[in-house]
Image (cartoon, rainbow, N blue to C red):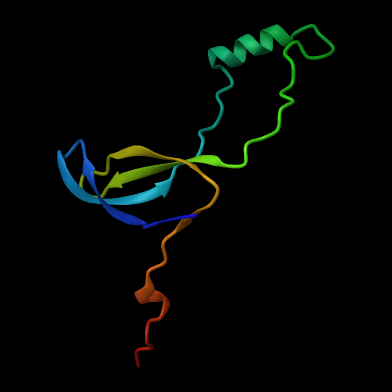
Length: 104
């Protein structure tokens, strides 16, 4: 299990120095319907009752590769960083906020 903070000081290649970055987990983009591979696959499937390409029959992997998106807070540019295969990924909880004393 990996705990990662929501903000981190990270090297910004656009500012060319270390800046505070906001960290978010990168999500997969939406599949484009007119991409060349998609059009080629649809053309290959045309006219057949069954499938032309075989279905994937092997078992799934137990973990996923985690990618993080670092957004610079000064120039607002973002860069990606891959953490690799992890079974569990969690955001770090700030201990000060968790056990904060009431103010009255």
